[in-house]
Length: 322
Ligand SMILES: [Zn+2]
Image 1 (cartoon, rainbow, N blue to C red):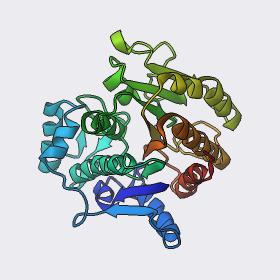
Image 2: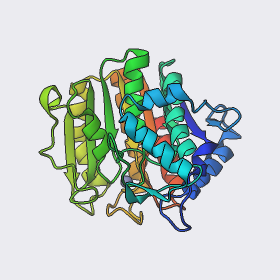
Image 3: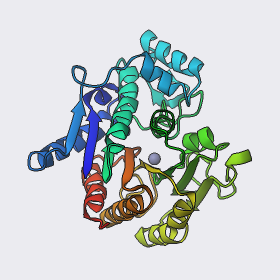
């Protein structure tokens, strides 16, 4: 079973008109899946200010398991003061940014709870802003808090998961996620990304530190990589590495900016490519985890195409055998 989770508060983070990371990204997705949900219940679970999870101190404590408490407070105050930016020009703030970011995290945790009541439950978390560039104590690259990292830590703390894996297929390297878990052996991180490219990290030589050495796998790919290159990299490197890691849960930083027409990315992945990844990851999750895969939206800036790309990925999950 696959279910899509979202929260309307994620629309409240705003920037200037025409900014690539916009509420319209999520609005289009929700509109698309509302149409499908009319025929297929219960596909969609959307929280909001009245019915959504509380954005309260216990949630902030979850954030503080992977982020600096001082940074969380600095972020909250910056939004409250009405600051226009935090930490970088790529991190605009608006009145609704604090709630949007916390709602994104809360939605991922809600999806994680649902998934672990499985077996055979796969969740797609349609939230924004994205998270995988956010560092321990700073915002970066449209990201404020690392949603997938908070979800991973939550599975460990709350659900007793001992080993998990995070696969990041956003076109950009997930520097934040990598750095947050680089010294740990319980979270295996694998990233496929365009390289050299923003944010500059993600060389194959970055493999983790200390007991975490070997629990980070970077698969930098040249600009222009297409479905065939990704398929080969998945088969030769990603899937074998994930099998060796033996995760009890699989998390995915699902960015859709390796799409061939993405305005920010430089890759050549097709609609069929995303569908194929959905099939592969569903099959792998069934094989390794009894069917526990939590995918969280990261990038993807071709607003008109994004609903179709996510649809293709989700269909791949629904179609895969096993
Ligand atoms: Zn990206």
